[in-house]
Length: 468
Image (cartoon, rainbow, N blue to C red; front, side):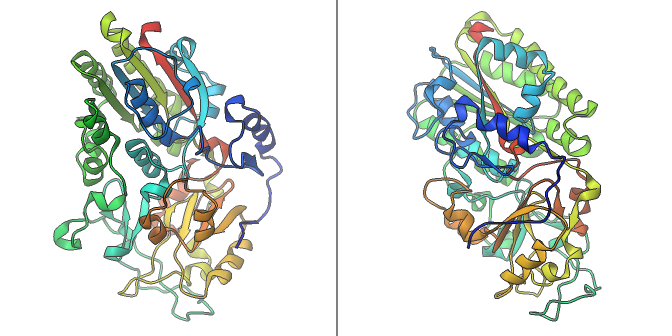
């Protein structure tokens, strides 16, 4: 089954200009599929985010199975590499500016290019690629919301909790029912999430979320010490422990502490050192106010200003041995919340969702721009037709088609991916598509997860601090 484009095209969309820009980037020549009709494809063969860890490793003299082309990084004799990950900072915002002084200084002193994120352009999938050096096809983690068939649950991956809507259901059924199943699942009622534990959910733990070893375990075998600096709420959970296995973990609670921790790790290094430093607040501002807002600019300025101050305090000897790689997990597609689509208002879709063993609907997984629909047998074409009649434009792929087409990446396909992918994968062109019991996601101004160039392309700046 081939991909289907549905709905209407917004004649005011800037896609034509974006296609011209992205299709002619010298560093992106030969990207499989390029940018077509507003949908971009990850450049898994040369220029994708999953290659950043290998690039850092090779800068430290450690052989890795994949990396960015050598031209992406200035040659040098490095003992320390910092990967600075700014959540939600897309290439479109980088090139349009204005940029904080840190990024201008790094770009002026180093090499700058656009690379692609992975698909989906969701933080959970992308940072798993950064932590494993593997594509989503290989590691199998497909977004914030994920189906775990082994425990008959859908879960929120990074906090490793059950979804609020998956714990209970409203008593009122939908007014209309499916022609296939006359007992349509009710719209779930919102409750609090429940932590997943071995005591309540069998043997499930953070390692069940994805396949593959962490890059830090591999680096340790080569004599490289690794550090993972992240907000405290992330660093110690089941996902964080699994994804950063082999690294020393440092939880921080402010942007000042984040930047200071980077400097301290470098200043204390006595052997080759890899520092992974992740800061999420820029992404939060994009969700709430969009990427063209004062809120977004303020969060970006805060983290960049703090990091710049601490890097300026490094002693000359440490700076001379340090390479900084600044990048992002994804960008954002600006949207109007009023245009968001609530799937629970489409009975032919909602009524055909697959069921858990206890009769609850298997809720859509992924996110509003990377929608996985798990359906009852024999209902795929009914749901496809209902989506085609809905007031939004999207790509609709059979799950197996998306895998075979390489959307999730190259390499050996994880069985986890095969078990979790939706019967249909829906990639909206512009809007968010979700459901009312998780209505907060329908209110986002900045959205990500899909294939729009604004979501997929991110900056990659490689700068020796000796040139700082």
